[in-house]
Image 1 (cartoon, rainbow, N blue to C red):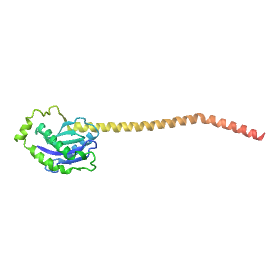
Image 2: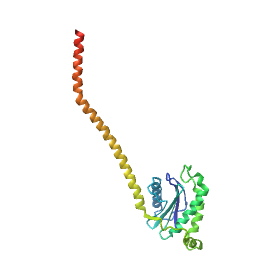
Image 3: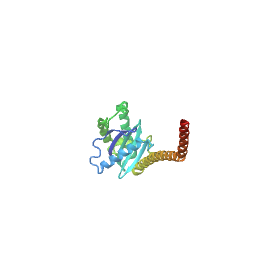
Image 4: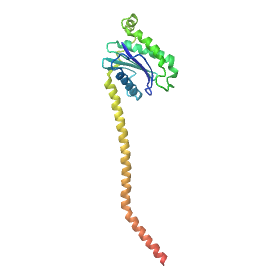
Length: 218
């Protein structure tokens, strides 16, 4: 059964639409929504390159597809057929692109296409019962294959993003520290040169001063 549906722009993770009644009766619904937002954030940073993926999380599975810089994601029970989940997402994608395609790139506020919820709810009802003749026919459709779509664990997927963030932060910190050390090294070299040549400059200055005074007196 489809439990949750969310649509977001991949380039910046901006949520564009979602099923408004999704997760209301779901235990830990907020936790799963936070996982989805974290996944969108990872996608916006390019941490996951797969355009289609299934991600296991507790008793559920996130399924997503990426088309036209938009991510269409749904969360289903583990027992729900993977093929139906991805066909559901394809139906959403086709309609979303048809209705909102020209405005996706210019959307500036979250949930700019919240009215798309009407289509999400209507389509979700068609996919809820896997035993209907319509859905059985979809399951038997040999032209639509999902066997090659990768399945991973949510901690593994989100953990990769966290590790990459940590590496990026560490790299930035090391670069910053290297600049600081380079500046300190230049200062130390400058001070060493001053200590080395300052006495010579002083002596030469005194000698020139004596010659100048002597010349004036004569």
